[in-house]
Length: 125
Image 1 (tube, rainbow, N blue to C red):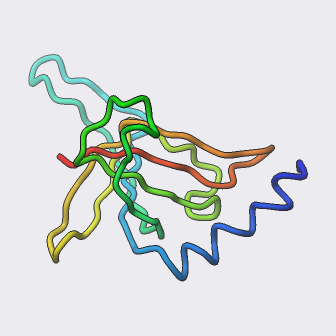
Image 2 (cartoon, rainbow, N blue to C red):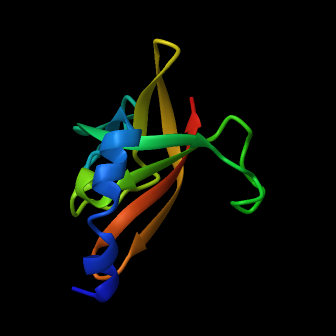
């Protein structure tokens, strides 16, 4: 374990507990099957409830290629365990009592030997 892990890994958990909100993280299927007859891709997705802080993207922060409706989410190391977020994944969150779905379009992970936290950019669908 690196020094950054032992120093910073415990920090995201309590902050997310106090300041975060519950979202549903939808992990893409690890194995998918394509049916050439129907054109459908099938596979079992996995959903897990995690705590996250949701903010809006500041386009100057991220290459200026993002839309004003994009979201920035911070998820801690204990929220997803050893799972590495992917752009194939999605999230569901509540906005004004409405459940919305967003596709992850960018992932940045701060880590030493293990992840400390993940910053996700998601685009509402």
